[in-house]
Image 1 (tube, rainbow, N blue to C red):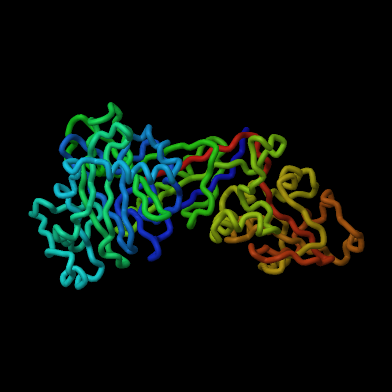
Image 2 (image 1 turned 120 degrees about the horizontal axis):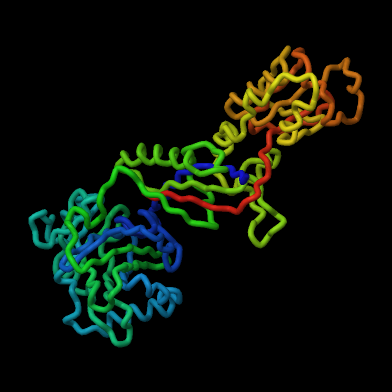
Length: 469
C-alpha cells in the first residue's frame, strides 16, 4: 500500500509594500506585487470576471510610483507573444501609437482616482471633484470598493490611450491601454471600467488583460460570452463551498503558515481537504483576507533509486537532528504541528507491555535508535514502563522522541554499545525516561539511549492537491 505524509497549508500572499505598483482587484497575483515575468501562469478554471456584449469589468491599479501603466488584451491562446518581453513592449507601444485617433476610447471610459489622504484629491489640481454613483462615468469594483473616487479634469488625462482596433501588424492584440501615473502617492490608486470586445477578432472565449509597469506584471483572466451575464455575476457567483483543483508533479514551497496537521493519505487526502475547508470558511469571513489554501500530498520518503522522478528534497521533518533539511522549505510552525499529528504518534494500542523484544519488532523498524545520546530538553519521568513513556510522548505537544536511561546495575552498562535487540527497556516499570522536546539538541551521554519515531518509506509517486477560493 502506498504511504504518504500529507500536510495542510495556508497560503495568504505577502502584503504589498510601498516600493511597487500592483493590481488591486482580482488577478493572478491576488492583490500582491509580482515580479514574475511575463506573469504568473494561468490556473485552469480560475476566472476573475465574465462579460457579454456591452458589459464592462472594473480594474483597480495602485499609483504609488510614477511612470506609465500598460494593459494589453488578447486571447488566452496568444500568451506566447509576451514571452520575449523586450519585443513585446515595443509591439504594444507601436500598436497604440499607430492606431487611428478614432480608436481611442479613453473619453468613453475615463479613469477615476482614489487618494489615501483625501485632502490631496479635494485640493488637487488634476481633479474636478468627487464622482457620484449616479454619474455616467462612475466605475467601481463591488467587491473592492474605494471610500471616495475623484474625477480627473479632461486636460489632465488627455494623453490617455484606451485603444480598441484591429491591427494588420498585430492581429493578436484586441486592445491596449497606456496612461501616465499623475498622482504617485502611497495608498492611491486608479480605477477604470472597460469592455472586452471578445468577438471582434476571435471565436475564443477566454481572454487575458495583461498589466505591466517597470519590472512588475500581472494578468486578469476574463471569460467572454455572446450574451450578457447577470450583473451580479460579472465577478463570479458566490457559493458557500469552495472548489478543489489537482495539479500533479508540483508542490507548494515556503507557505506563509499552516492551518492543519499532517494526515495519513494512503487512501485519499480527505482529512487535509477538510482542514483546509474549515480554515477557509473562517478566513473568508475576514474582509481583509486574500490568499489561497493548499494541500501538499507527498511521499514520506523519496524513491532515490529513480532520480529522474524524485528530487532529493525533504518532504517532512524526518531528519530532526538536522534543522537545515527543512527550515528553508517550511515555516517555523510546521515542525510543531507535524510532530503533534497522528502520523507521528505511537498509539497506545501499539505499545503493548512486553517481556520479549519480539512484540516490539514492528515498532522498532519505525524508530531511529541512537546510542549514548540524550536530548537537552524534556520532561523526565521516573518509575515508568516503556509503554507509558511512548504513550505520554504521543500525547504531548512537540514531543518527537524519548530517551531511556540505563540502570547503572545493568550488566551491559559498561559496554561500548547496546544493540537494538536488547530488551531491557521494554520490561518492568522501574525505568527513567525523558520525553524529548522538539528543538532541543542531542548531547553525548553514556547513560542514555535515544528513540526517535520515523515513518516508513513510500512506494508511490508524488501528487499535489491544491485548493482555491
